[in-house]
Length: 116
Image (cartoon, rainbow, N blue to C red):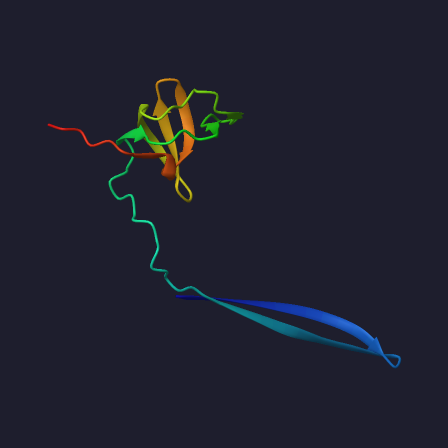
């Protein structure tokens, strides 16, 4: 996979009492190669999926319209069960817990498999 960006810059300069004008085109190409140690995708996770907290985050951020970042003083503990409300960019999820809705990184929880 490769991405290419181009930028056109115009300039004017004076040399020996004569004005010169021109343009410079800069090109940048970015190549991406896959690594062997990519984490497995969390394909089981979707909106409405039940989850269980496996590691308590040090700080938690509320999923309100005016988010609040605070230290996790035992509010979110390993073993807490919740439900996914929405997916955010990267591996960030809005999770509804019994104490409220918080934005949590995917490394802090896993899908809860319910037995039938």
